[in-house]
Image 1 (cartoon, rainbow, N blue to C red):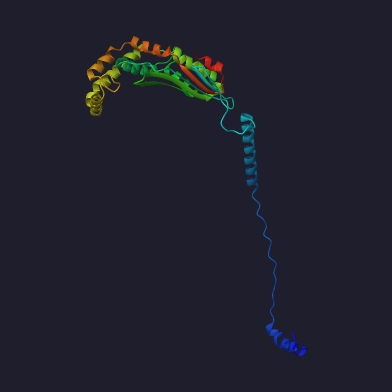
Image 2: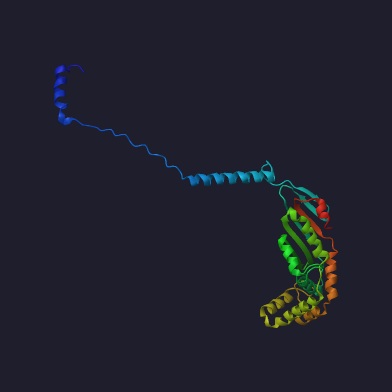
Length: 272
């Protein structure tokens, strides 16, 4: 800055640096915020949760090992009548037995209805129906009849823990081989079906459906229904021996048995 003398600097300083132009700045340090500590009870809750997670991890490892769980490796055996998916990863089993469909005549269709009702209203040789169905419920098992144009089939199934396998197999055998079809209940069941046929005169929806089906489908077809009188006579002609004979046909058919889970071939062979 050529041309600026010391006198020039003094003159400007005396004009600017005066008391009226002074500014005072006060610097105040900020307070340090203290971190709030979670109550001790929360620490305890987190500890409990962590322990629970560790416990579940240990339990899972004990059941399935160190392998990552994907699709289970199944050891499949199919001997025609017995199909086994052997998988011992978890202590659980599922078993289903089913009979091939037995062909039915028109009269047999009603015989199968009587058999179904009689089966569920009767017990076995050693227990009444309430005791039998209590055991079914406890073991996670169920039974059913399938009646259709292919015929009638019978199946019994369960999904349960492996510890109940022996009890389940024993119940299966008892329900198939030891079922007691009550002859006294047979009379009442047959009478109930006959009454329902007689009451069709008041069921206009059923009447119109029967007329339509008989117009569309020829005689002898599954959907072609005999007249009300013919059906009443069919049911009336059913004997207790007819019901027993149909049940024997089902029992003596070659049941197909399928099992999956923590079981072996020898377990299912006991049902053959």
